[in-house]
Image (cartoon, rainbow, N blue to C red):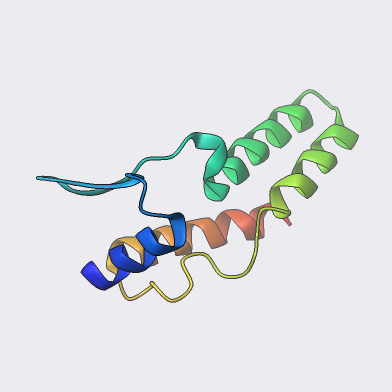
Length: 98
């Protein structure tokens, strides 16, 4: 785990964005900085637009949501059980958005 945390800190710049507490590690980031959260927000907005009958807007939002994808979720870290489960959930959501 420490190797992954080291890699993450190096990738993000060690400016306190990955913090350790008694409960474990925490990534400090705004919602709009986390692509998976942006994806989920956009797909929820697309669903709302579809329910309102605004299909062009729903399609636009889904296109934006799918644009968040840059390969497999948590690639290279799926041997961590919690990340593997989250990656699977995100992949299912991506397939639903197609």
